[in-house]
Length: 73
Ligand SMILES: [Zn+2]
Image (cartoon, rainbow, N blue to C red; front, side, top):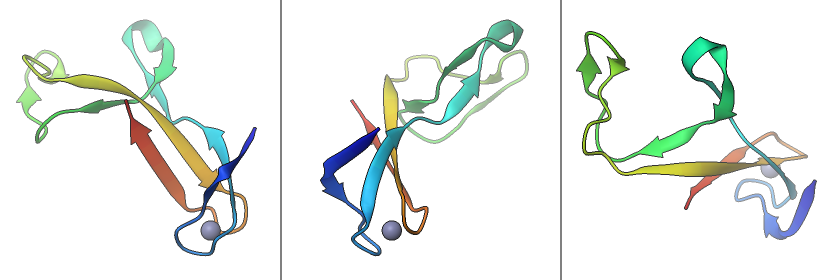
């Protein structure tokens, strides 16, 4: 999937849509999320997400140089 509205900031090549894969509970596949603030370790959960804003991300890849550009909405 190409998005011709976006142009690579590094080389002005075309950007194609994609996403960064994340693994949830029981290895479930999901889209990586943007989390507000600095990472905070949690003994049980790996990272604590308490009271943090979470947004799904869309990541675009330059078909020429491979540069990644991510958006969180
Ligand atoms: Zn590029």
